[in-house]
Length: 143
Image (cartoon, rainbow, N blue to C red; front, side):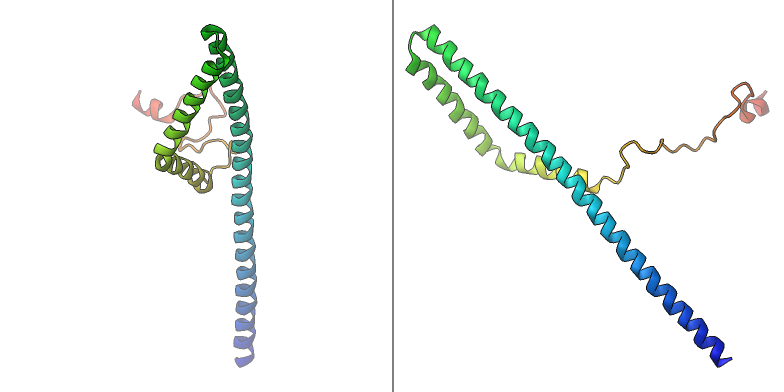
């Protein structure tokens, strides 16, 4: 009897140890997935910001040349563009906290979102209807 209980507790100990190891592995995989999502979002954001930077740069250069031609003065045209840049930077500094909160919320949404992107179909409470010609049982009961 004592030997059976020792064997039983050894099996329980082995199972609990195995369970703990599996749980730790699951936590590691979850952390890797979250880190991968974060890295992909940050990479995408960096690429997007780089493209927006160059777009803004070329638009302001074009505006500077346009204003230079229109005002017949290169200095005045590019000075107006410089003033627009200062206003833009001032707006970013003025709304610093709102911008930070927006970025933080976006990152937290990515990290907290547990959806599997579109790998699985949405869950419904209605059973699959393999025979569309057959009427719904609820409709048959109502008839």
